[in-house]
Each structure stands twice: as structure tokens, then as C-alpha cells.
Length: 253
Image 1 (cartoon, rainbow, N blue to C red):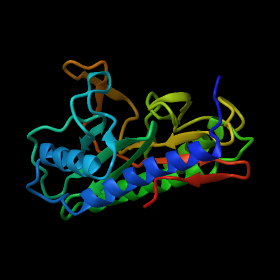
Image 2 (cartoon, one colour):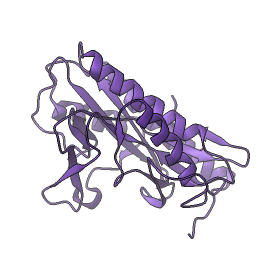
Image 3 (cartoon, helix red, strand yellow):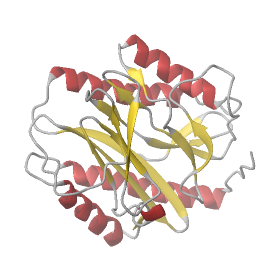
């Protein structure tokens, strides 16, 4: 891989973009209630991003038409905001990426809408813990397989499944870069992590089958995905800097 580590100035710029993304998710949380549409969520994120000095990186990225992804219930990722109204009991992943000063900060969170079932709550909590297990496996001499191994071990023990085809990625000067960061793997295998390079850790956790269904997005090379069995899926995502001693989560407010 031709991964070029970031210098100190670039890390500062990357941290600023990531902080913006974290602040965007914190801002939108108070609006995630029954009755709001995903288009309204998208407009709020667009306005907040621009008014705070950033650009929503997903907008027009390979033809993607919106400023964020909104993935409800059985939608795994890349859900396109539209006129869908959130209902009491839904879960929704909101995925935002801010571009600032030439760098990208990427983060997502699954929100619970109103009062959700215990089953949905457990899945959401497991998805967050799975992300943290993956992040905690990051070492400067480690591999992406180390991350995936810890995620999959935790998720399997919880009785859930991990999506295999989609995952995290390198990020920095470009939105999506090497390496692929899976939610499964073997210790010591796959790509070697590079100190002072950033990756996203973003496991997608399903209640039922790990298999996915793929749908086109009009005018875009991207696809959106659902579970094959209609069961729930949840996801969290942080952008993480690999350091010479471990890691630093950048998408914290």
C-alpha cells in the first residue's frame, strides 16, 4: 500500500474536520424524534455544516444526492434522506462526513427514536461496544485483521452477526482510502496499520443473517443496503488516528 503518514500540521487539520463531524452528530441528536423526516434531518445537517466552516462531503460524492446518510431499522448503510417520517420505536443511523481545509472527518451514530424495544436497545448498545472493541485492538504494529477479530468475537458472543462486505476505510486527504477495515478477520492478518495514518472503524451489526441486499441510488455509483431478513441493523463509526504508541479517537466533541 502507498499510504503516506500525516505530518503534525496535517494531523491538526484532520482533527479539526473530525471534531466538526462529532459536533454535527451532537447537534442533530436533539432533533431525532418521532415526526421528523429524514429530509429535514439532512437539511439541518447541511445548514449546520456550512455555517460552522465545513462542507458536507457526501453531497454529490460519486453522485450521492444528500449531505448525510440516514439508515432506518433494517437499512444497513447509505440510506438516502427522503420524505420518510421517523416513528416511535425506530432506530436510525446518521452518518456524516465533514470536509475542512482539504481533510475529511467521518462519524456515525445509531439513534433510538422515542421509546424503542429492549431488543433494539440491546442491538444498538452492542454495535457501539463492537466499535470500541475494534478501536481498542489498534496498535502501531497491528493489522486490520486484529480489529476485525475483536469485533467479530464480541458480536458473535452477543448472538448477532457482522456485515462482511462493507466496512471501514483509510481516510485523510481523501474520503475513502486504503486500507479496508473489516468487522471480521484473523489476528495478524490482512493489511498492516500505518502510524500517523487515519482509519474509520465502523462495524455494521445485524440482528439476524449477515447477508445483505443491495439497491441502486439513482444517478450515483453508490448503493444502499438492507438486511435480507428485514431484521434490524445498527452501526457506529469513529475516525481514529493510529499513533506510534496506540490510537487517538478524533471524532469526539
